[in-house]
Length: 109
Image (cartoon, rainbow, N blue to C red):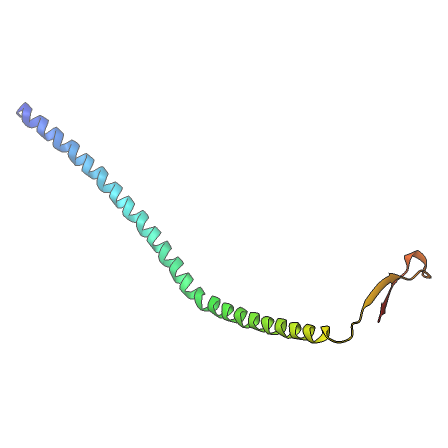
């Protein structure tokens, strides 16, 4: 065989080996990307299934917060109505007749 032909065949073999290496890397990358894509699809499906429950919970919380706001406004109106009338007070003190510091006694007026 001609020496130039031999060199040409050797170079072609080296290129074939490199192409095989590149091809195996591409196959590996395709498998890895496929696995990652499946993981993203699964996460998306989980979130889609989870959304109606969360939407219902948020609606429930919104309703309850509305109720709290109503109670808060009612308390505010009661407080304003009570501030114009007679005032009452409550004091707390320790009963001096009770041994060991005793119990608390409340007095209101």
